[in-house]
Image 1 (tube, rainbow, N blue to C red):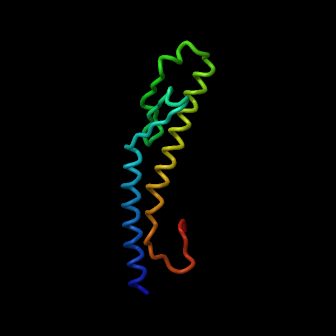
Image 2 (image 1 turned 90 degrees about the horizontal axis):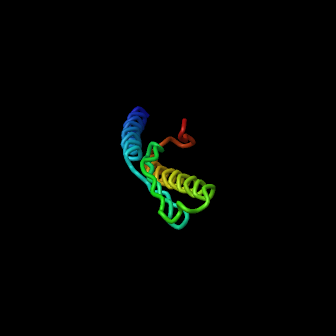
Image 3 (image 1 turned 45 degrees about the horizontal axis):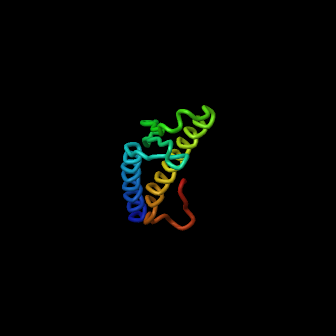
Length: 107
């Protein structure tokens, strides 16, 4: 029994280190969101900070409300892409953790 708990603790420590590494990678990554068929593009980092906005020149003569909607849609697209990438990076971290029967994460 003692060896099982010690092994579980080692696995938990490794999982914690892997989780921290994955969170650092996510914080440093950048994703691009688009709307209007690529007429509006934004770049967002893993901390949800908007780093860049690119608006096609053809949109400046158009309706202000439409441009605002396209910017909002591009930001929302970047947010959704970041969430998806984050989920993918973090989902495999608990695989291989040998928990006792009936025990689930989070505890």
